[in-house]
Image: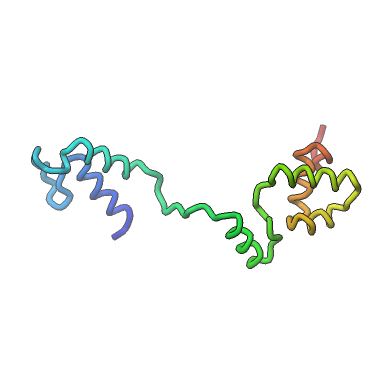
Length: 126
């Protein structure tokens, strides 16, 4: 059964109609109970698609490694790591070394340095 067909059936039931015959359901039908109607409409109005559970940082790291990306690519920066990055950058550690140390791309390092105001973003016209 396709998702659209299932939604059509639920919609008919939520509106008090037998989806097979098109007849109005009797008042004694369980589908005419207010809680059942609300439950059906809640399902119908929920976001479409199959939402996958959010990956843990460890799962994302394993996925990155398997795809040949830096281990921490796409993961948020923890506050202590942001501070450590700033300290190392101020101490003169090159971006390439920072990328290796933090297991992120050079672009991610540069982006975080821009966010912290430690470097200016390239290509901006002031």
